[in-house]
Length: 112
Image (cartoon, rainbow, N blue to C red; front, side, top):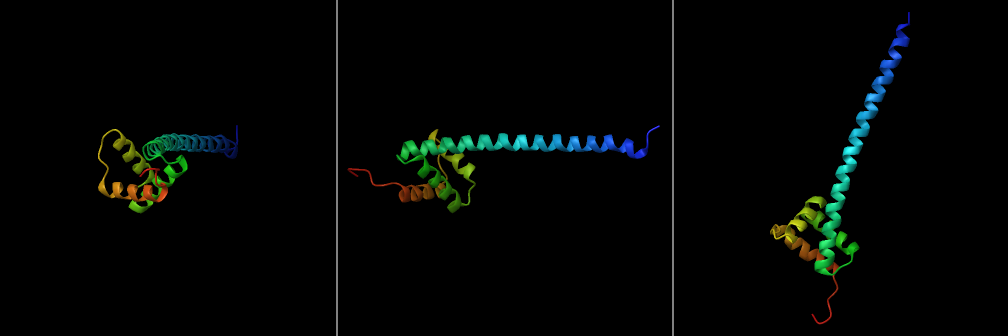
């Protein structure tokens, strides 16, 4: 016959393992979300880089500033830029802030 303390050990270990599996599933889900979010942000930086002829670093800065100045999450700003690149209208507050941020981070082009 086993003692009650011995019987509790596997249950405790089982509880620990269940907790660890749940923790790893949550972490995995968060990493997948972060990866998807990062891809959207990178694509928006690419759009800004091509259309505005700025560096990728300046593209990220423009996104970040537009996000901060409009109180819109960075991911949401990036998503709006991608939709705009496909023909959707930008919300006016975001359009104005993107113009201002781009003006701060672009140098005048020769002949303009």
